[in-house]
Length: 95
Image (cartoon, rainbow, N blue to C red; front, side, top):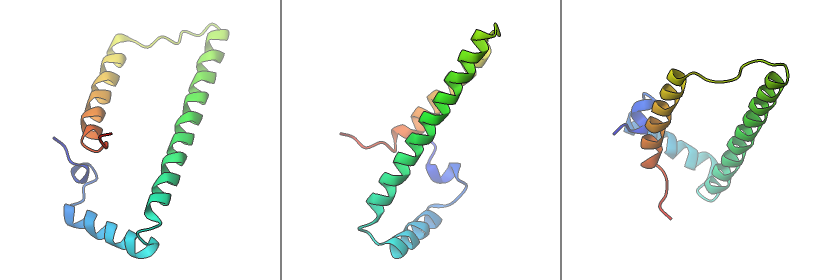
């Protein structure tokens, strides 16, 4: 299992120090609001990216450009997706 600190190349001590600085700067009461804002921003970015991708694909199809992805690329994408799901599985909250 890969930890977030291993991917970011920072140690656990450094993560705790960063969290301490964040709490000192913003206060414990403001952290959920900041996280919520970051989540909304990430969602907006993802939606915008999907819209751009959709428009490019639509335009390419209208102009007769082949937009199919080869089997090898799909396999690599699935590998990356599986690795990402393994990583985020340890981070997600259980409902």
